[in-house]
Every structure is written in structure tokens, then in C-alpha cells.
Length: 123
Image (tube, rainbow, N blue to C red; front, side):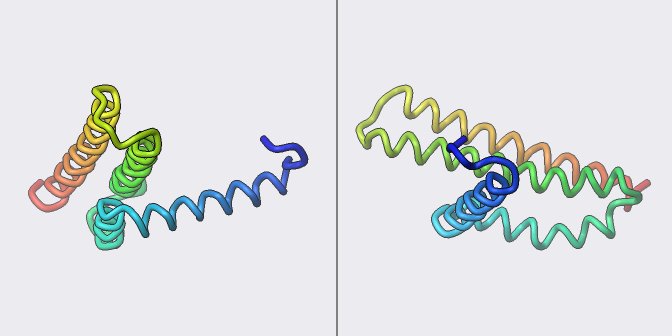
């Protein structure tokens, strides 16, 4: 924490940095834009598919989890790219692991939506 940035001042600065990060991700990361688009379409469907607050929360949380993991993956990729453009085994491994995390979050969201959708329409 920077000196003098405590309490409300810290909250204001942190919020500003967070918005700056969201805007940068949206502007520079195609995968993040696509996932935001899918989230925008799926959020209203969560009200229809979710049969109660817990199932609604599971549907919405799975969408936001994908966005969170994508943001972290993008941060990893940016740091690795900042270090250097030459191929290095550890750099490639870091990017692959971040990509795997995104894939797992997408699978988890798909399974969540699939199971709750199945329960809604076929039970």
C-alpha cells in the first residue's frame, strides 16, 4: 500500500485501478471480449433457468468465474511477454497453465449450466 492511501482513499484508488484493468482487458484481449459477450447473453437466461436463489447464484457465479480466470490468465501472459519475446520453456509453461485454468473454468461453467438446464427442462 502506498503511503497516505488508507481507508476511503485506498478504496477509491483500488477501484480506479480495477476499472482501468477491466477496460484494458476488454480493449486488448479478444477472448475476454467474447466471454463478456457470452456472459451478457447468459445472465438473463440465468433468471429463467435458475429455480431459486442457489441455482441462480451457481449459474451467475460460473460465468463470473470464467471472466476472473481469463483476467488472471491475461495478466500472466502480459507479464511473460513483458519479460521477453524469446522462447523459454518456463514462459511457455506459464502461459499453457494459465490457458488450462481458463479451459477448466469453461468446463465447470458448461457442466453447471448443462446440469441445471437439464434439471429445468427434462426432470
